[in-house]
Each structure stands twice: as structure tokens, then as C-alpha cells.
Image (tube, rainbow, N blue to C red; front, side):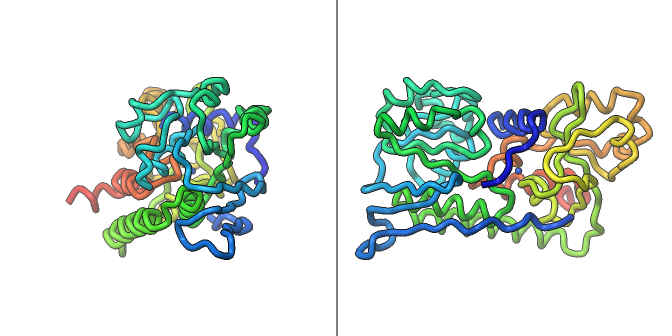
Length: 315
């Protein structure tokens, strides 16, 4: 299991994930998905190992599902589980059907409400474990299965997550279609950028009072890499930058995941010497599709590509 981020950086990322992921990330150990010897694809019982290393077994396809994070919710809806989803995160905003589901909490969860929904399985997320201390045990004591989805740092890990969720819900064929669609969209974006001179960028997730940026070995960094954008940040995770360090890095583009953060930088004279500020290469990208490891990741990549290479996508 991966180490959790330092407290300050964790808060920034958790909020980004819930309201809205240099060098290749080190591959994680492949988790096993097993079925009974007599079973075939889409049949049960099925056992899948989650992010905590626990084997979760479902005897039959779940009829009632609760999702605790927006990325899980988007995967579940993307697999066609509209009727089965009964509970969602307070910050879920996509697809629109989430507005017809019971809200079970945002950064903190109402365990009594979750239990009252009588779910067959709850899909939690590794990035939210700080808010689930003790809660998983309560749910399991009530006879509810809890599967903790891994906090993916690469596209391949995201594909694995979609496959694992599909295995537990009997939606393997749908998962293949979702993954194929993502890959096709990414290929289209990359083809448009063939031969384009690479640019550098900062991806900013917080500016007040401190500046937090996207570092190496994160999902958002993977998004930059796939379109040949060099991350100006060389540290891992979600490091904090002083104004002086921020100015000294001086990338070609500044990308922001929250509305208003760009104005904070633009209106501060300390940053006026940066070429991205002088050239107005400052863009607010879609915070949801760039932070949620799910079916819309290619849309997130496209929003970044359009911001960094407007000359390609605005023609």
C-alpha cells in the first residue's frame, strides 16, 4: 500500500478529488482478480483484492451500491450501473443522475445513512482513508462489503481499477468498451500533437496562502506526460512552493484547477516577471476531469492540451 501524502498536501489533493491525479511512476504490484473454477466472465462468486490488500468476495452481482468518491461514481455509471447505485458522495456532480441519489457525505461520511441504504457493496477510495478510520469496520460489522479502490497514478492503473470494479459488478464487457473509448480519444489527441515542440508547465492546485503544485508520480503528472508537456516540478507528490521558487521555475504555461487562482497570480506583482503571466498563458482547466481517475480522463487530457497548445487545437 502506498504511503499517504504529507498532511497539508493531502488536504489539497483530497479537496481537489472530491470537488472536481520526469520519470514514470513506479509500477505497483498487480492485484489479483480471481473467480471460482467453474465461473466464467460475468459470473459469480468473484474475489478481487483491494487497495488495502484485502480480498473482497461477492457471491452475486450487487443490486445496491454506494460510492464514496466522485471518481468511483463516474466509473460505476460508466459501466451502466445506473439502477444499482443508491448512494453517492455529496460532491458528486456527474452524470446528472447523481442528483437523484442519496448523499452520504463529502469529506466525512454518515455511516448510519450508508447502512440504512442496505448496500451490497460500498466502493471507497484509498485517497479518502483518512476520513474512513473506523468506518470500514462499522460497515463490515453490519454485513456490508467495502472495496477500497486504489489511488491510481497512471492510466494503466486506472484501467485496472475499471476492470476490478467491473469484475465485482459483472460488467466486464462494458469495462472493455470504456477503456477502449479512453484509449481511442487519447490516440486522437496525441496525433494532433505530433511534431509539436514540447512546452513546460506548472499545474497549480492551491495558491492561498501557500502555492501547491502537481509533482512527479501523480496522476495529473501522467496527464502532462502523455501529451509531451514537461512538468516544471521535479519533486514527487504535491509540493509547496515559495513565491521565489515559483517565479524561478518560470514555465511556459500555468494551469489552474480552481477558478480564481489564476487571478490571484495575475494580480500579484511578484509574479509579473514570469513569462506565462506576461504572455497570458494562464488557463483554468477542468478540475473534475483532470483529478478523477475514471471514464473522462481523456477529456481532462484534452483540456490540458488545449491550454498548453492552443495553436494546435484552435486552428
